[in-house]
Image (cartoon, rainbow over all chains, first blue to last red; front, side):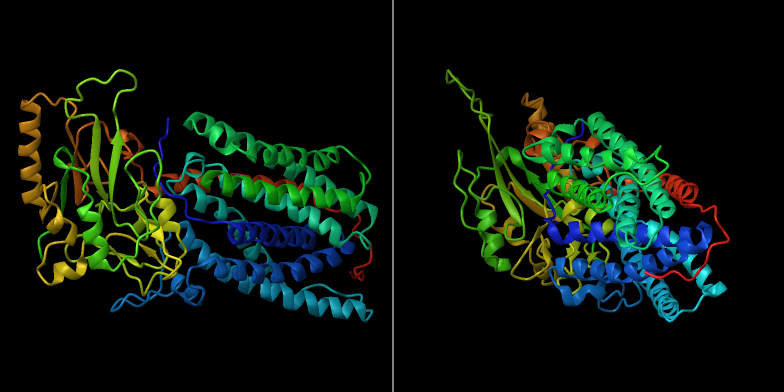
Length: 293
Length: 267
């Protein structure tokens, strides 16, 4: 049985919000790219919306992460070594928080390019243009950006595991849990963004995708609990009010799972999206807070 | 380059006077926290940004009928940063604020740290604390400024029983080995050195002589002393597999089947 004597780092709401937005931003970018490459021509509008929404979310990520620092104005110390006489860049690939700082910066650039082109195409679409194929290099940027987006969504969980905290360091499934839940929440958000314009086919496909992501999240959740049980720290994450949060998290998986076999949109899109997004947020609250308090 | 230095803390002669805590606070200008009074004599409770030395007072007085304690009713130990050879805090620090000094000690540069606090979650000993006054994390510096002036650390200087001994590592290790042999010869079977060899984080520059197993003192045993990076590969692999399945599922679910429709829709 694992025994821990580490102190909690005091990562609370800002970090929770950062991890939540990172999952949404990474997931939205990936779904927008999939729509652009594999969707119907009508889905291109939803792809543009995904790229447009991603960039503000990345900005929010940077703001939340910076506010959480003890010295927010020294945020750039994550990237530049300010040790007297040292200089150069801070690049520690074995430290997820170092790698993640770079990933956030680079993904920010990719999401900015996606935002600029999607906004421009959206303006043309509103002006009545019908030929709206993005340039080839934008499609390449979308693919690379998707890989970075998946990394951003998942490394936040890896940061927790690569520690000596109870619960966090006892499971290697948190990164998987965060990327699966990030995809699920972003599918729900995308369905909500496109609720008035997407046709029934698009809505059904988004709900089905969310069903798959929820299934993946459920499996990751089981792995998370099993690894904690093996380390003997499962009770640590269920203490106090957290058992209630976990029940809510599990219940939030039900709406997307219901849509798995459906051939038409299931239930109220807005309510369903809200339940999924709230569940993903509560999952991060439970993981982050239960280990510390 | 000076020879590596450190502390040898012999808990068998600690009397719990807390002179080390006071000397540390005085030299390092630490205000300390408000005393926390509970069921016991320990009013400091833990190492943190304001407590770089903490005397642990571990109550082992038997419940019920009082018997002769044989000197083991209370365990006392002056805890401190271990200045690990393989330091978890240093491993994760994204700003490179945590460095190894010319004395082979682990030091946090206050001007480089930006207060991300990842080192706190990494330190297996609960040594590092965040100071809301300075906005950075703080811990024992092994009196880096005093070392540069050829002075011994304040806590070792103040310790009235020589429980805290300062010196070069080789010298301290020899003293610790001799002391352990004496205690064993006296019948103290549980006496053991902690961090003297490389089984705990490659060896500790601040190592201890304990009178019970490490867990009793709130220290991880060799089995539980793992670096944060032990979870890197498994965590990234699991995340990669989940991401790959997610993308595959997304492509399968979102792939369209009506290519002749218009591209002109907008949101």
